[in-house]
Image 1 (cartoon, rainbow, N blue to C red):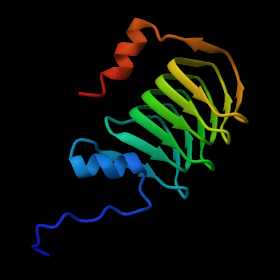
Image 2 (image 1 turned 90 degrees about the horizontal axis):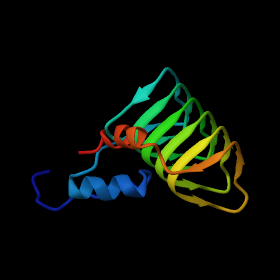
Image 3 (image 1 turned 60 degrees about the vertical axis):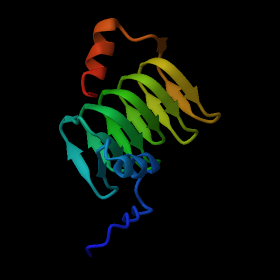
Length: 140
């Protein structure tokens, strides 16, 4: 209880969240698979989403689980998408995993797409300077 040994992070948390907590610099929020949200989400923290979101998401970093569905716009500095997205995406650094299904236009600075991913929309390299500043204002 009063020992100075560091506590071990739970293994079910995203790897980036575990490392961030150990350093004390990063905060994160997890929206589980049993959660459905209707409305916009704005967070200064990193988000890990496994549930169903019907609304726009603005955050520093987004990790989406395979079973997750997001119906709305996504704006983030970084995103790793593995589920279904129905809406536009504006992200500085984007990783689209093979299980991802995206229906909407995608604006990015850096892009990685795994073989097997589905994107039904336009891909545009480079965010508008105004949009890019807005996406980065959440990170200090």
